[in-house]
Length: 68
Image (cartoon, rainbow, N blue to C red; front, side, top):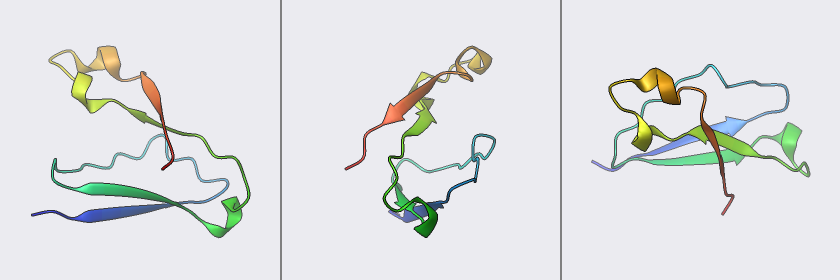
């Protein structure tokens, strides 16, 4: 079943330690909260396609996402 998950980003919130688990069919939307309107925002995520048996080797690898 396809679902859309929305994460609102706000200035001062550090979500580096937050883990959001998603199913393959789901879509994730990031939305700028009112405190970030007009700001240049860069968004990074880990690449879960690269997780393997030794997942610790990829835990600190983050990739910049492109806003669309």
